[in-house]
Length: 91
Image (cartoon, rainbow, N blue to C red; front, side):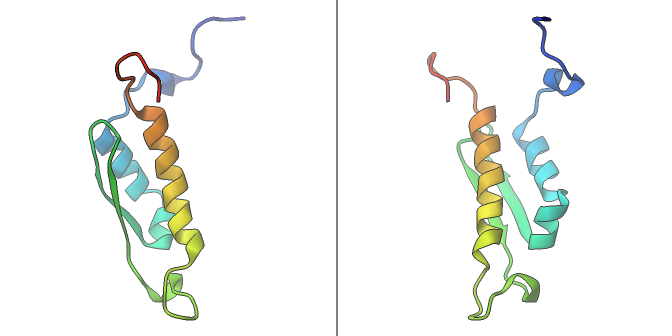
């Protein structure tokens, strides 16, 4: 078995701005009205806006819960896996 990492994207360093741009261009986020405003350089802070529109509003006039959790799950996973190792401890 090979000891090197496979896949050409393993050698790409993903920055906070690249992740923000990619998430803002991702079709599920566009469709849900989710916009990533800011990602800190160390991936410890993420600011997201979800506009209340006619297509993501429920019966009582608030956001569908699935839209909010879809934003949180993707960004939380990306932030914890991309966060740099600090003081010898992994995230």
